[in-house]
Length: 263
Image (cartoon, rainbow, N blue to C red; front, side, top):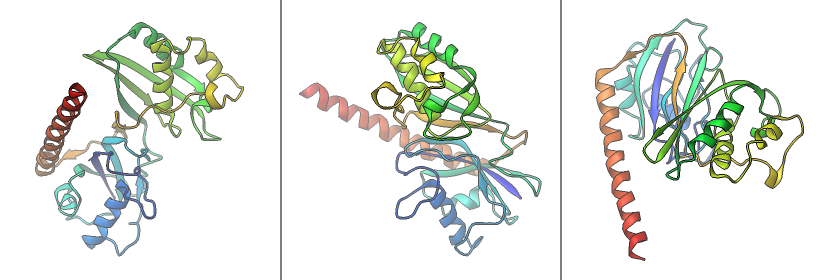
């Protein structure tokens, strides 16, 4: 059994989980294994993934594990993957390893554009949301909504970087937590809204909390207590691909700015 670390740009994809008729990250991974002859159109034995990121969400350390042949290095995996998905490290793991259930902690980072600051209000909201709570009003899930959550906020220029850690996350929990923190930061909601959201009464409609945009969110770490070996060639390929994407996005931002400023 081998586990692989995967980085991907989530913007072109309809999420991680394989779905019919739309492009997903998992769909690319499984199709690549088929093209490489590792599988014959099916899912490899023992296959599991660390999590299912939403459409538009990116990852630095998504993790999948399955029974892989010895020759399937990260570089070999990348040979048939699209540039937007890169495998960069791997580790041999026990035969009973499960990439979903064996994760000790997951960490997401959300880059919240907040040039007008008001960081003190954001930090009070983050402190109130940290700890073990029932987050049933911040997820569409009906069960498994009690989580122990850690939230750290740091200022990086015009961005408020929100770092969230937990053993696991309900669907949309990270984006809705960030959405609530941002509401309070902007002054659109009082700090007391946290108590209402964490209360037992369901909150629906306009009184609830919608998810923040997915594109500023990255899955940055999944801890298994396993030491991954970085593939030097795959690492260089990954850095090259994401450097190209950075340049493309920077140029795109200049174009959008020029259009805005020319109106």
